[in-house]
Amino acid sequence: MSHTHSTKKSRYSHLSASERGEISAYLKMGKKPAEIARLLGRNRSTITREMKRGTVTQVQDKNGKRTYYQAYFADSGQRAYDENRRNSVYLKLNQCSPRFIEELEKAVKATVRCHSVDTFVHDYKAKHQTETIPSTKTIYRYIAAGLLSIKPIDLPKMVSIRKRANSKPTVNKKTLGKSIEKRPEAINKRSEFGHWEIDLVLGKKTKGEAVVMTLVERQTRFAVACKLPNKQAETINEAIKDFLTEYPISSITSDNGAEFSLLSDLEGVDIYFAHPYSSHERGTNENFNGLLREFLPKGQSLNPLTDEDLLQYIAAINERPRRLHQYKTAKFLFELAQTA
Image (tube, rainbow, N blue to C red; front, side):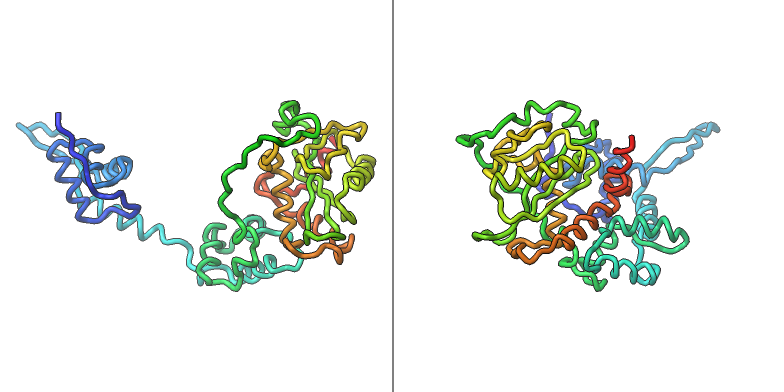
């Protein structure tokens, strides 16, 4: 049994009229979709979708008896394609609500930004249902194309996302206490309220520099933070003791940094340590710190940072609607969980 293999490279482009003609000819020769796909250098699903698009019902009169059958025609496929293209033109910028564009630019460029592009689009659509509003994806396309005054640099996440480097070996690294492997499933699945993750946000990596300690509740993503004069383990523990009296903290998950080496000495709270070089095991806190970096860029000294400014930054994030929470805020969910 012979096999025909195409030497053509797969292309991520729409089928042409000539390719539709080839599909019609191959079908008349009795070839199957998988074989046609190989001959044209296309994915099999592309061929089957095209066959469905261009198939029409035909009638045949044979000896006075009418029979109906399905047949693919290249012309029918091309007409259906052209019609779909006319109907699928994405929203043009000049068709958008001018008020929407104006308020979006104002919200995104705010000194202390409370909205992402996605949450602003969702919130605005809910409040102005009769206006023509583009999707979040279209807005990002406009930004990338330079059609708005918003620039990628105005959206830190748009320019800071990098491919994750290969993980480092995890040998010869001391674990400071109870491993994350012993953490109960209720914490892992976020089904229980009151379990937090901890980390530090650093400014300049020089002696005498202040740091910011952040704690994020896993279920609601609500965060608290404070500025510390240094990252000594004793300083960290004293700050956590203050939070323990103010917030419902049942457990804390940390990395294996020396600054957290005394966490296991704390009473009334379970402490778990993530595996070495496994920041993804504390993804909730890592994500929050990434959001906080919008206000506290890397390499910038944190010494001038005031407690009032830090509280304002934390509040802006806690009060930001999150798609993860069906556009509710972390603050709202945290307060709701406390009253449950």
